[in-house]
Image 1: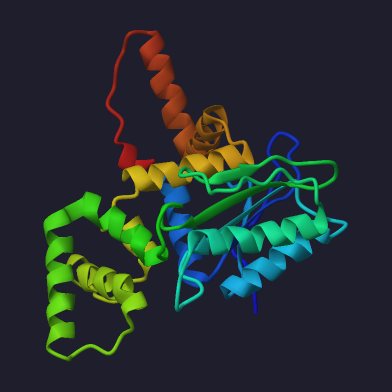
Image 2: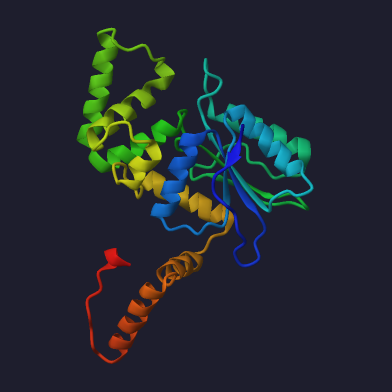
Amino acid sequence: MSSTLRSAFKVKGKVDSLLLLEGINDCHVVTHICEKHKLPECFSIHNCDGHNEALDYLELKIKSDERPQFIGIVLDADQPEDNPSILSRLDAIRTILRKVCNTYQIPKEINSVGTIIPAIDIYPKVGIWLMPNNQRTGMLEDFLMELAKEKCEPSLNFAKECVDEAKKQGFSTFKDVQYAKAVIHTYLAWHQPEPGTTLGLSIKAGNLNSHAPLAISFVNWLKNLFEISDVEIEQDETAYLLSSPENKARLLAAIANVENNQLTDVDINKL
């Protein structure tokens, strides 16, 4: 059963905006990346519980009388399993969009920084991101391996060696298509105080580099899709800092001190 994890709310008149993801791990990873980059909560993250279910939900929402103004979909590029293909994923989305509105301007190839399809008539602006990087086949864990590489490449390489040796010795039973999952969980087991922490919490804890180039590219795609400006991000951060009377009093006092050339130190960790 699919579910919505992140509550949507309107920002400067925007109507509901929706991001469709394949599974619960994807939802947690994207949520924590958004938090690391201080994106405002101006869109919902919806767990579709599967890639086919995500495609079905995309069609359902675009056809709905209460369709969102912006809708994005993130899919693993690992289908079909016997011959995974970037283009097959794009073709599946193209078929859905053309079925609903045959005048959608859909590119023949996926954009390396994520695809954005303009809104047309009453139909929403559509964003497409194919894991890991819109260029090669893979899945969420391949995306996370890039974040691990930027955090501690020697450790990631050693995790690969361990997984390769386990497979060579006949200790492993995973399919080749699941290689990235085996590697990233091996890597994370060494970088967590308690092995077994979820992928999303590993980002929150800093075990994966949420500001790696690929993560930044993904965040920029989200910002372009949902039309999130840097001003909105700054306003959202300011609203958070002023959300409690104690924080507000400290910051206003600090501003007054600056204006009077009386500088004081403020511990940001106490805000």
